Image 1 (cartoon, one colour):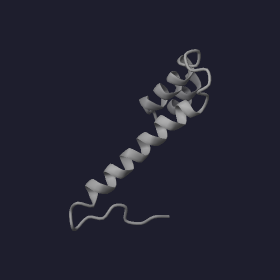
Image 2: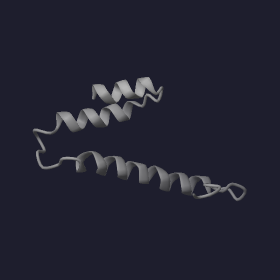
Image 3: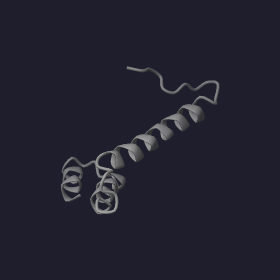
Length: 72
């Protein structure tokens, strides 16, 4: 957790949920010993996909707006 916060401070990209995800992974390890990295990957992945889907729906409702303007 400390390393994640220091890296975010150093790169000036402080993002509180990033520190919270690392903190949850460390503090819940005794409760969920078999979770490992899936405990971090699944909530972060599902949250990111949900935000992307909502952004696609909301931003494409207006006829003159298209989101995203291009895909790589």
